[in-house]
Length: 262
Ligand SMILES: Cc1cc2nc3c(=O)[nH]c(=O)nc-3n(C[C@H](O)[C@H](O)[C@H](O)COP(=O)(O)O)c2cc1C
View 1 (cartoon, rainbow, N blue to C red):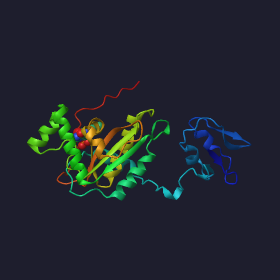
View 2 (cartoon, protein in one colour; view 1 turned 120 degrees about the vertical axis):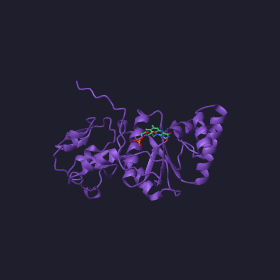
View 3 (cartoon, rainbow, N blue to C red; view 1 turned 90 degrees about the horizontal axis):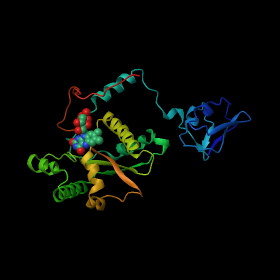
């Protein structure tokens, strides 16, 4: 429950104005929890200039010093980053630093999600033996079921792994299928992770085949930790330090979204 520290509160009521579900009202000039639905977004605390709001007794916002101010050319830099993000499939034979991954996956907790549910979780695989076993299980399944025969064809005739590239690290994103919008929430969290990893020089590629296979191949379930109840896989990344893949300019986009103004 949100509570106000009255000694700190200056009664500006900025917190009340930003609440998306009018969960905060006013009592004696102070903000007060109305006992209505609260989606725990903590916008109230983010708008409070005095750090006067707590959630279950803990500060409900980060300290201002924990957040770096953005540089003046940030928008230009971000635009350049969006254009230069690429899908990388060729990687060095070393797993990605776990501390860096942990930090980035934690940052994705600040991505938006429907009703602030944050229904997703991550599984990071950086054990070569497990990755190899996963690929073997996928190949066996593809051969037995006839699903996605191009996986086996590419692998056996071209030595091209369209499922995992040359990954020594894989990230799987799972989410609660009963959440309001698990596919969108997962995709937004993953996009946040991708942009952050690539900003740090770590290559990523969405792995749609791998996602589908994780949901379909029983043998993969035996290699991976069990998912929480009602969870399914909604996305996966090939991840690694890029090798033999150096983009010097931005590819043309042949398919562009139509934009209509009304
Ligand atoms: C949902 C999704 C699934 C994808 N699945 C695969 C995949 O299984 N294998 C692969 O090599 N690339 C996969 N890709 C990467 C796309 O091929 C790539 O994003 C596209 O060709 C554009 O290239 P760019 O990301 O470098 O701009 C996937 C991308 C998305 C968004």
